[in-house]
Length: 317
Image (tube, rainbow, N blue to C red):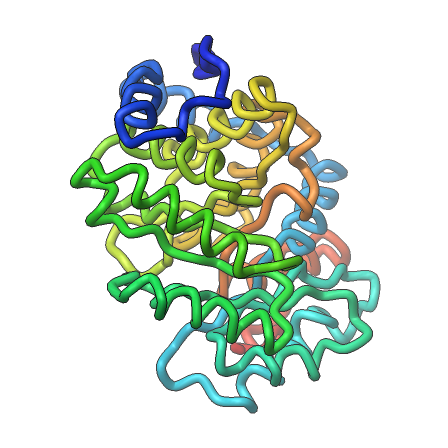
């Protein structure tokens, strides 16, 4: 795919709404047919047994194990934390997940349950998932999560402002949330399914990175279209080209709809073939998922023993 790295210096890009608009609309247009064809072709790559075993463990270590339901309870969060720390109690060689992702009011519960494990606590914020709130509310939401101990914050952009072309407003809000995060890492959710076009996803990716995102994330998992190989490929191109232009590396997190080992391996191939192996690390690539871990554990056990266990081999939560 052609490079999207800008020919212009980035120092003056965000000085005004007009300058930011010129920059974002000056990015090369996306060849939708070519993008989807490349994503589909990379998805056909076969992985042999040794490589598959490595890929499964890598995918487990990249999971943000997530519960974001109105019925979440402290007990459910503690159970999820225990599973994330020891995904397969019968095989202690199974790696732990990267993070547990919860709502802000359950961060303290997760933090206490994960003490000493090295697993991060991620919290959604900024009026997740719709993001329909005043900026003061979004910043308070972020500060509450960080004060409770969140190591990472997943924010949602104002899609209404972005689609209306108010790019500087979106930039300033991301920048303000980044400041409110303090030492916590910021993942910026684009909600690709609501952005209407690949060109918009490319622009939103660059906008988020310019504003200080540590990660760009495909989706909330709460809309009809979430992560897809094509939109993730596009975001991987963006982070690759952003690093080439600025020297700063930004992570990518596909979320929503990634449920099987086969799906996860396809995404790892996309990472390797597009951004490169620098991104094949939990520090730079994550899966936002709840059910994916179970399938990875089942496939891992199959490779280890040669047989599948019954449906009660892994816990539901």
